[in-house]
Length: 321
Ligand code: UDP
Ligand code: MG
Image 1 (spheres, rainbow, N blue to C red):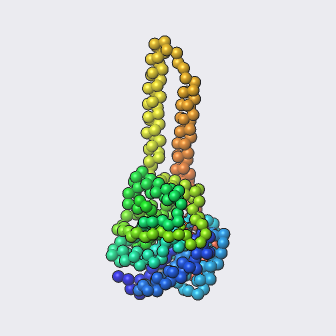
Image 2 (cartoon, rainbow, N blue to C red):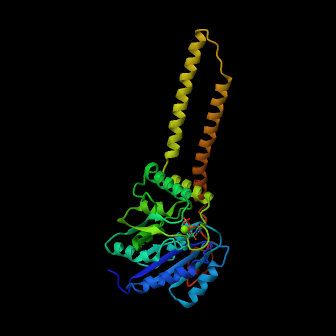
Image 3 (spheres, protein in one colour):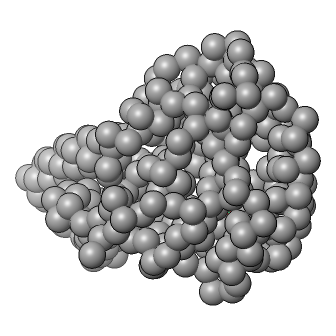
């Protein structure tokens, strides 16, 4: 049961979202005024190029529920959310984007499921308005890989980036300090009692998506390498079958030689060299992806660096100086 003592934290990563934050604030405030619940809103500015932090600071001056953090460099939305979670004080936290694609009016439904005992509640996208076909296709492919190849079958097939987590899950997440990980996959992997509701992802109100193709590809590689050794295992199997095919072919050439059939095939030899050479480079690249992440983790650098904050006691926190 929620009581006026129950504190809900809303965490929003924001990159170039100055045009969206005032309206999002109005909608969140309107929704939560009717709920029997106290709340705080932590907006983490992921080193925006626009006035995002200025807008957050202005709202924070008029409303004590609002807290703001600006990161010193763009760390990606998952790290920005991790930063928000590190400063979260709520009994549960809702993570939602700043662009109004995740309607704040869905928050009471998330809270209902939490009250019924779920520790993680995913808001699963039923429809995605105004999204390009290639964005939806890429997202479906990502969740297919995560469910069927990496083996995290609990991940929603149509994806989710709007969710509620209980304090227990937040405390568990604080024990993880990985640099290259998808936070959503990590939450799914953690276990606990997970439930979902569905919602319609709406049009982006203002600006454009900060998820470039490069960031998306990094997320895919991070997610796969953090939870699976499938690519390495695949390399071993593939190498084995290619070697086997090579030995069989060598046997055929040898037998043909004994029969007096001349050995021909400059073109086929070039194809084999190019294909095998390319595959070897690709496999070295896969090994390199794992190796680089191992090296990066071993450096134990701070995962994010805070440039400035409003209503946050960051002096006791990881500032990375
Ligand atoms: N975001 C961020 N850092 C980034 C890119 C995005 O904090 O480098 C934030 C963004 O401001 C938004 C949320 O992450 O609040 C989701 O991003 P976006 O709407 O661009 O993603 P999409 O809806 O296209 O998946
Ligand atoms: Mg969006």
